[in-house]
Amino acid sequence: MVWDETQERKNVSAQRLRKSLVRDLLVEAPALAWLRRTLIPRSWRERVKRFWQMKSKVEIHRDHVRRLEVIFDDDLARLGRWLGMGLTCSTFKSAAINEIPTWSDVDVTTASHASLAT
Image (cartoon, rainbow, N blue to C red; front, side, top):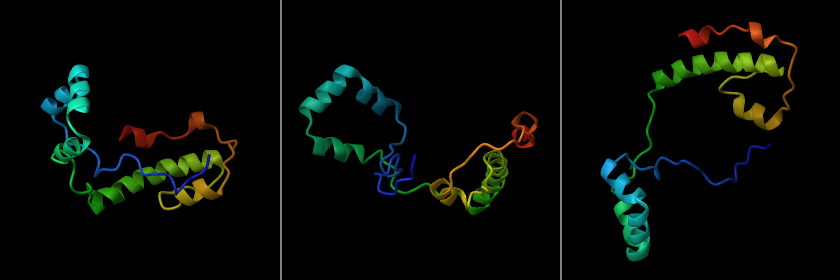
């Protein structure tokens, strides 16, 4: 498996729709979906869909990002020991692209799970 920068972006927040029970019932009902696709031009459907699309990317506050990085760095360090490589949030992408992991002799059954208790 290789990290591919040329892949099309997936799950892009600008294309994600806000939740709406009424819209979901209308859009997901099989008979209504067929009618909608058959009778309403795609350009009109896209224009209506924009009403529910997220206009801006959701931003996580820097303090929350730092707290998450501390948790993830702990988990990645543990995974890195199992794979015989150093892993952190800041090095993960490079390691995934450039290194070939191999399982080490670390006993994973006795590894600390302190981060799961918090």
